[in-house]
Length: 192
Image (cartoon, rainbow, N blue to C red; front, side, top):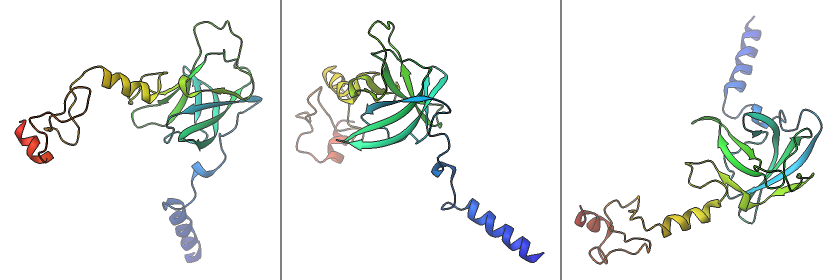
């Protein structure tokens, strides 16, 4: 009886420990259920996208993420798409969250008109046609650089986050004459 209790406690300790077995490491859900084709999308960042993550069109799951690679400081996301899902040329990809604390997934957004044919096996959705979800630092379909250029060019007077009182000037990022040459803590007090 003691041997059974000891064995049960040992198994429970392994399963409940942080370095034990994990469903994330198993190849469950990484491939398609049936016939499928390859699709690749290139993102600026896909660090939160899980291997085996869902690929959707709207709410319908049409594929899975099969592998992730970093190439030239970009995230290359390989996916398997159900063969019954035809994606028109011009389809874009966006990383979304299932909920605020949920898992990230790939949302495929077909164009309004499918007049240029369909994506073939091993097609690539380039960086210009990928983005992060709205509210996560980028505008859809434009990439991080375009978003930064738009914010700088907008003329908005944004103060630096780490130094709320440091008087930054519009669009140039240079300190104003009033706070130039002063340490950040002093400049912060001078503008308050």
